[in-house]
Length: 136
Image 1: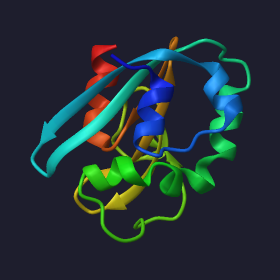
Image 2: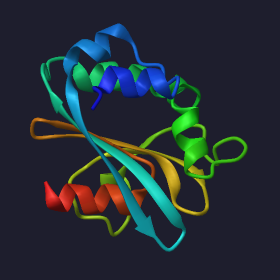
Image 3: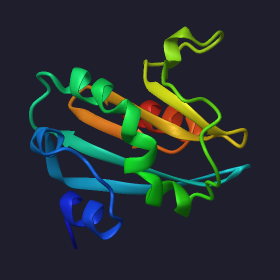
């Protein structure tokens, strides 16, 4: 067994110390199987929600690079299709809980994250984010 910090360290995933302090060390790692391939995700209990959304927003510019090893495991090659994040709620036809996302490839590979109740949810596809939010 290992904690979130150990997991991030093992994959050379970079997160700020400030973000690390807002998240618990216990997490659930999942693999979501979809038509386009297997997608990874994390659900982490939030310790302190104050300022978390702003902190995550400020780190969006570097998330692709910071989490690159996680996305390599999901088959990512090359640069992201879109260099910026959007709100899922602004996407025509989507009616679930809001989350932020950046599209990495046409094969539903992306950076998706949400603050949902007391949890920080991070997934590598839109479909996996929708499913985990339904289950939470």
